[in-house]
Length: 283
Image 1 (cartoon, rainbow, N blue to C red):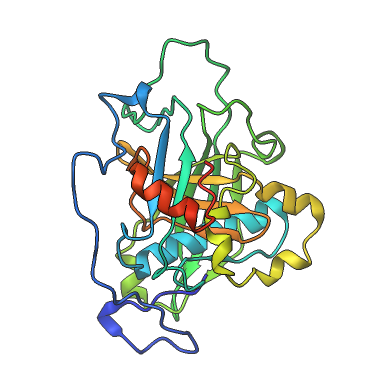
Image 2 (tube, one colour; image 1 turned 120 degrees about the horizontal axis):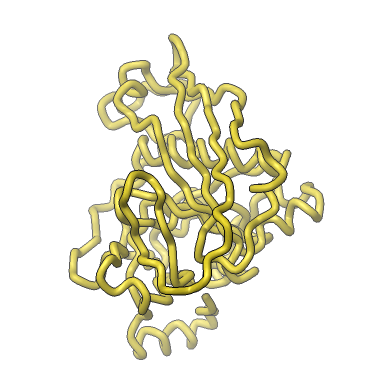
């Protein structure tokens, strides 16, 4: 994914395309626009992302997206590219993506939890994977950033990567065009939950726009392409889990970390309008 220009020094990044989203924030807060579901967690089964409900793509979010790209390529031993809707010219289109959310998600950092777990039999906790990544600024010494990767505890199946990979992983240097002062101000620890519970064509609502396919998908092994089916990553922010990345075998890895999850479905009128456009609204 492209590194987004830091606003404090616009136009100074070498050999990088600026893709800053200059569109004004269109996110209106309401009681329905949160996934901090501590009070009604067990009832929530579906959320959706709306093209009109997002924050501008920032330099900080692009760092996070590139960390995720770095980790996924290490896990699957490939060279995939994480793309944002802005890079696919989808940011000004009208679309919704629907996600079926597992009924229980527990964040085991400190004592906080997001989705409260119902009284069901729990499987043994899967090991968490730690990825340490030296992030290099345009010049100077790298800054170590850490991503803790957990299996989604509400998922019916745990991806095999949690048993095949070692608990501690140190990856190659991730080079960035940012100044050391900017990197020093960034978050250095992330907690991400991973599952493969999405529909195989979970990005199907985007297909009618004839988005440019990720060229890397044409040459990757079939086994790697299978790993993308239903792949979802969720970023933990305090007591909130927010969709960060969705994948399928046609579009590839789509970064959605700056889109605001909305509980439930759009209204019947909106649903009918989407059907008339032949947009799939499956999960």
